Image (cartoon, rainbow, N blue to C red; front, side):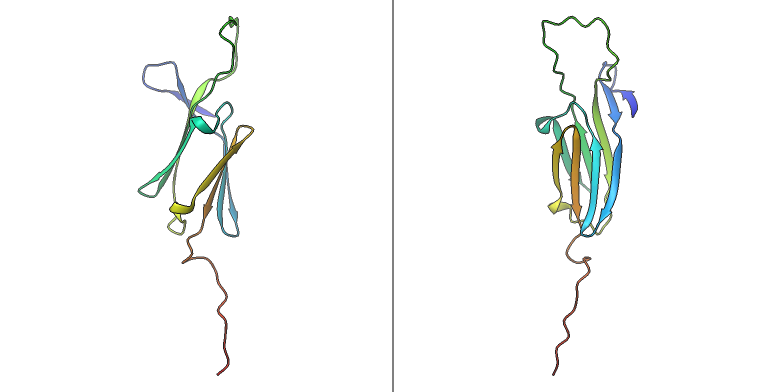
Length: 120
């Protein structure tokens, strides 16, 4: 996971591990965003660019005093330029067990279709 600090704060911006696969009706993207839940994930499309932002949700109780930690605490950010054949208005997203799944369907104009032949 590539990391950099956001401005001068101690919050890191991480580039999450991502798999992009082709499916029959479009593209699926799987993104590793551990510690983020659906309220802390923002997926948007602007000017044919898909942006994903997610915030890490810390779950330690305030009564704990951390003596040592090796876990990365960071926010996530990724951008993708969408191919022209993706229907950006039909993109859907779901999250489960720290993995964000995006479904990017092809637009109807580019989906293969069978043309029925009629007899005259």
